Length: 373
Image (spheres, rainbow, N blue to C red):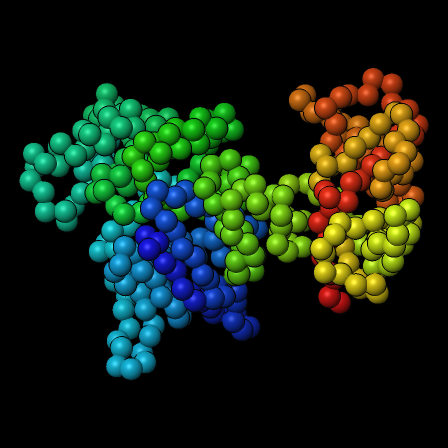
């Protein structure tokens, strides 16, 4: 049985002029020891989902259960009474974006504050605080004021305060967004190491795709208050379930047109007829039919370019080279096929770019979805 179960959770916010966006029937199971990221554009419902789990927002309907205990339920059927356990009794800790530390307390006192209400003796509190601060490498800073710490150290204090009561699950609301890039990378590794070493169960809210893909056991990709897809990072990247997922993650080339039947030497097969570009042969199993309006998505790294002819392959075209951008470990080359521009990721910088290159888009690297208009 999953540690955390979120069923049919919905929340609508009242806005001037009518109802605003919120959550639309969120379903989520989190296993023990998992690191789950909630990812999506601003306003998609990531933080609202987190706050409903923590008890800081009250859903309009649904059920939230943690380790067999119902934390929230709107069920009134068959004599049931609604349940809404207060945040402090849920066994959940939360690390906020702004850390929410007490500036008038030192490091030790801030962490000890997280143990208030735990019915521990002073000696037991001291023991727990020391153990937790040693886990985050801050024991030597225990007497310092918060203002004397760096941003990374303040983040570790906030993490220690959340860990001290030994919560069943820790929620993180964009905790690294205030750090500079290098420190953010260091903190990602430190939090992951701590999470794995202590077997923590965590839900992490972020708008940073690299952060979500690089840290998570599974990613929950949200859009407009709904879950678009849940899966391992590689699953979302390689097998997007919807056109939104395909277009949201990373850089993706999109081409839209009409599905047609085209000859391919070995017999007829489905292709996408695109205005201003050659027809593109589609992968098998798309479920599309001739006459459908559809879009295809292919990542820059899944397109091949060559200065030599690539005959005998599907979807090979002569492309005009428009330019290239060097990123150190790779180069992005922009080419033009007909009137369609494509971005291609290459391991090599073209010292003397030719006017034209051969471009190949293997059908197996294409993701296709029907457009409903």
